[in-house]
Length: 129
Image (cartoon, rainbow, N blue to C red; front, side, top):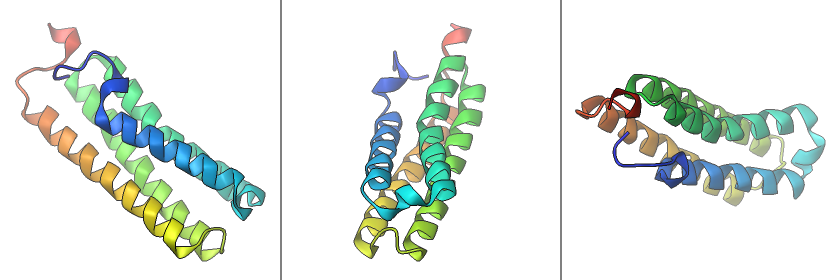
């Protein structure tokens, strides 16, 4: 996995962690905290992005990492959908929705770029050293 020693040093992980924290702040500071099912879903999906990046990194091989990165990307898309529902239900305003949606799209784009990098890398992961 390139030259990274820990998953915490990956930019995509740092972006996912920020998004997860931003979603949590949104939950505790908006009417979303009372929409229990949606609250739990968006909390879970935003956490799943960073969790899958970490788990894939920990597997030690590019093929498995790519698979978990695709799960992370899917969870980020799920978070976008849940943000749309939060907006549609008037839990968040348009400005907050747009900010978080752009943030999600940046993560999706960065994950896609990282997947492409790993697919084209001659290094196949730590467990193959």
